[in-house]
Amino acid sequence: MQSRLDKSPVATWWWTIDRWFLAAFLSLMGLGIVLSFAASPAVAERIGLDSFHFATRQIIFTIPALIVMLAVSFLEARQIRRMSLVMICIMLVLMVAVLYIGVEVKGARRWVSLAGLSIQPSEFLKPAFVVICAWLFAEHKRQPDIPGNLFAMLLLALVISLLVAQPDLGQTMLVLGTWGVMFFMAGLPWFWIVALGAAGVGGVFAAYTVFPHVAARIDKFMTGEGDTFQVDMGREALINGGWFGVGPGEGTVKRVIPDSHADFVFSVAGEEFGLIMCFFIMSIFAFIVLRGLSIALKEHDDFTRYAVGGLVTVFGLQSAINMCVNLQLMPAKGMTLPFISYGGSSQIAIAVSMGMVLALTRKRPEKRKQMGFVLSQRAMPAE
Image (cartoon, rainbow, N blue to C red; front, side, top):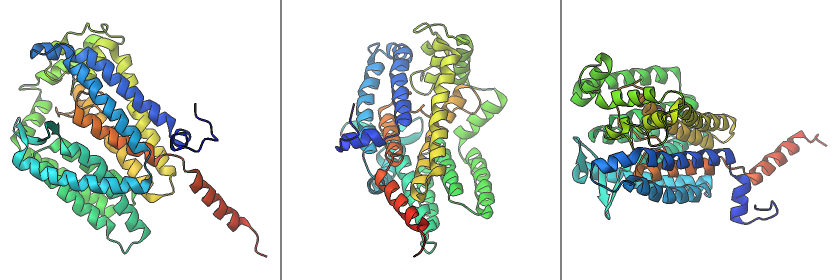
């Protein structure tokens, strides 16, 4: 245990970090490893790999993810902005490169191979996009002459265009929803609320009209007809599990769901550990989002408020989409459950994002002293 008298960087970090956030993130990482051992052996055996191939890789991915998250949490707000600017420039270039040299999977190009590693640039783009937009909104509010809101809109248009070109409409919805929440926090006029709402409805209609796979998924969800095998099996797993589950390793639905270790790990958790486990997982995600928004609302610094609010919003929306698909509450969409689903690129990107949350929500004693000094000066009677 570090002493409060110790002024080393590690000791300072320990006494200023939000330990509730840290405990929640570590809990999700631990659950990801446990559920990987439950969900992935059947998938590995089905494709001829060692039983614990994916579980071992999940541990391997979690270690650097934890290191990255803790390393980012040491940064100051200014360093977070600089890192995000570099990240977004690199990821925008990779997003363009994906369209030409990316690996095509099921008709979409979302991955690019670098030095033997497969990277999904859109995953790393999200936290950088949120931070840069938060900075632009904050600068506009600080100095209305700076066209921060306009630049944020142009950046949104660029990112959305690249996502649609892949196409990746799930990430498009995620980015749009998060940007809308941040713009709302920044005090957008009612005109823009109506305009953005109309644009969202128009975008869904356009996607339904232009992309056959989107129309097929929506039609399947609305009518229940067609190939709904995975979502049906996911819901069946939750029903089979009941309140307390059938027991670790005893689930059967995971043996037939192709993505039981990734997109449908929540269903495996429900079948083997019961609805109690599902509620526990949901409560952790809800706690992170609600605590983040609560801290953001109390924050006096505009940049920190928008950035923390945006980062926990994208985190919460992604987890909600995954769980809703598992519960058959929305059309099927391949989106990972943060920190729990299998995937190296997703793990590292989420670790960067949550490292930013830890960094931006750290207590700043020097800032509090300065504010207290200013308040005391104001309270002093004039001589």
